[in-house]
Each structure stands twice: as C-alpha cells, then as structure tokens.
Image (cartoon, rainbow, N blue to C red; front, side, top):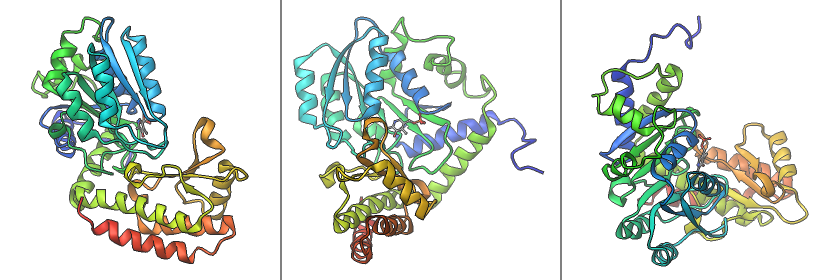
Length: 366
Ligand SMILES: *Cc1c(COP(=O)(O)O)cnc(C)c1O
C-alpha cells in the first residue's frame, strides 16, 4: 500500500481552496492562479503576458534571476532598461526612481524580492511606491521571500506576485502561483502578443477557470503536489505566518552573528539590512574553495543545508539554505559547529553569539 497511489482526482473545490489559501498568504484580494511547474513557469508567463514590441521594461538585476527576466523581455521584443547593482547589496527606491525618470516610456518593472542564490533582499515597499507613481506594472519574484519576510502584495501595489512552494514555505517543489491585479489583467488582455492556447497563457486560465467560476478544472492537476501544497499552507497557518517569518529572520541573524565570531568566512552581504532572511551566503577567503568547504561540511554532517554558490561563485561563496524546516536554531548550531571543525576553530563562542542573536531576533516584532 502506498499513500502516493490510487488517489482520486483532485476536485475543483480543493484546487480553488488552495488558491484562496495562497491569496491569504500573499495578503491579496487579486486573482491567484496556482501553476503546476516550477516558479519559472509563472514568471515567464507573467513576462510574456505583459511585454510586447513597443513596450519598455525596467529590469532590476540584483542576482541571477534578473538576468533571466531580461532575456525573456528582450525575446518578447520589449525595449529593456537594465538596472544592475552588485549582488552583495540591494537596489534603492532612489535608483529605481532615477531610472524611471530617465526613461518615461517604462511601463513594466521586474524585480526580485529576495535572492536565495546571493542572499540579498530588496526594499519592495519603497520601490513599489515609486513604480506605482510612474504608472508601470510591477512584477515581483517573491519565491525566496514568501514566508521568510513580510510580503504585502496589495498594500505595496504589486501587480504580478510569483511564489514557489519549496523555499521558506517548506513545501513541495514544482508548484508555484501568481497573483494578478486588475491592472495587470487589463494590460495583458490588451496585449496582442500575450500567449493564448499555451501553457504560458495566464489569459487561458482567466477565461477557462477564474472567470468561469472555478467549477470545472481545465486539466487534471498533479494531485500529490497540490495536496502537499495544501498541507504546507495548513502548516503555515497553524504555526502562524509571523512565527514562520520570525524563525527565518532569527536563522539569518544567528548565522551571521556566529560566522562573524568564527571570523574566517564572512557574510557575503555585508549590510544586515540587505541580508535575506531565507538564506545566508558566506564569502570564503581566497585560499579556501567554497566547493571544497561545502563538501567537507557535508562529510561532517550530511544533513546540513549547505551548497557552494552557483556558476562563477562556486569558488568563493558558500550558501547556507536555512529555509523551511531548516530555519531552526538546531540547524544554525549544527552548521556553525561543522564550520568550526572544518576551519579548525573552537565553535563555542560562535554558538553563544548565535544563541543570543536568535533570541533577540525571534522575539523582535516584524
Ligand atoms: C528558487 C528561486 C526561483 C526558482 O524557483 P523554481 O521553482 O526552481 O523555478 C526563482 N526566483 C528566486 C528568487 C528563487 O530563489
């Protein structure tokens, strides 16, 4: 007997209820579409729905995903203004305002909230304010921020907010969702280049599912993933979203405090205000390969959520993915203990600093 087999098809009512739970998590009353596929699916669908030849996009690049968005925007024929900042920092609302003022034709802005790959986070509330004033649509990649830090889709004025289940939500990979504001629907509906009769079509979902009363599913959803997503949303609701957010904030603060005492590896994002709660990235010294360090840490403790940075960062950056169930004081302590062993340093003082930082951050109000 396998709990994964012989399941009845997922009902439309269950699917709609999951969408409503996601809407609550995102603090939005906009339409939410749950997509089966990794988060890149709704991100690409949002860009292809909104962008077209003749449109001008401001693409804010604060990590690797921003580069991907720029490529899609160009592929859609949009004129793209790239605003790139170093991956160990954050973009400011002032920089965004300058770019908008310099290019009045901008009608779409793509922004990543938090970057799990580089460990930085951007001040979305302020940025969204200047984007709204300019009148452009704002697409936010919140895959690495949802459940790790506040995400106020409607209050901030985010038009297209994309999430995935597998990071701070502690849920399944391969499921994702996007909220679509009324303004965004109007723009997409008016875009002759927006995908139709396509897996990337948000308009198909609107027509066949959302506007049709969500009574009949247009396809058979993957039950296992959807049931897992529903269970994960239930678990977040039971724990309380502020508690889940506080755990992530505390994990980042404790990891940063601990490594500062160890003093061999250093926070890749130096400014605490720019550090993402979802994951902490560490810079290794020139004579210490991050890939080698990650391998040694995993040899010491195979359960640690560590990996070397991607691409060119594999040599110099170690990622500590303290998200989901790994956003715990035990995981932070185990990581610092293994780092101490690998670096030949007694971890006692680092653990003490981490405990103190955890207590302070876990009890601070959001
Ligand atoms: C992980 C991540 C993604 C990609 O999510 P997938 O579900 O793997 O496609 C996109 N954006 C950000 C910021 C992420 O951290």
